[in-house]
Image (tube, rainbow, N blue to C red; front, side, top):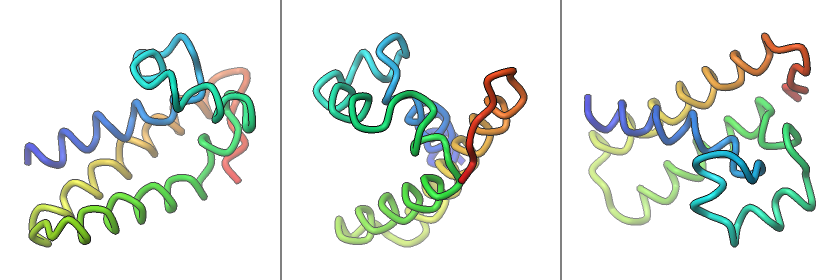
Length: 100
């Protein structure tokens, strides 16, 4: 349960890695600058393709770190759920999100 909750928090925040005023973006400034420059805010990071890609990347990383499957799956499910909830919230704003 804790892995899923932690994954959900991470998944809901990681989308704003391309926004300099986000809590997550401020903490990873060396990553933020190239990502924001290339893709801009609400670009590729705010798409369904990014949900699948991030979920696969986290699963692959945990698999290669030899995490037990019983731990990796809840973490990935949490990240995907958090990511999708952030997308749903953005979709409801006036600016919207591209989704694809």
